[in-house]
Length: 108
Image (tube, rainbow, N blue to C red):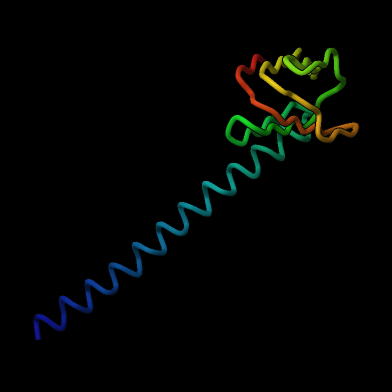
């Protein structure tokens, strides 16, 4: 009987632990989403870097300088300078820009 009881308690503990881990993961995801939403509403730049080959920058204002080794962007907070090799602007619109190439250095 005690083996059955301890197995039942152990199973209940596993269920509670899984729920707690899931809630913590959901909470962390929500904090990140709300943080990014707040930054977007305030017009702050949001920089997403994928490896050293792609970069997305949201909420930039204008392109200051562009060649294959350096791209300078104006943002609400100042200038962003991306240095690398074979840099190219793959896509841009009024609010977002996508940069591809070998990104070596990012200065904000």
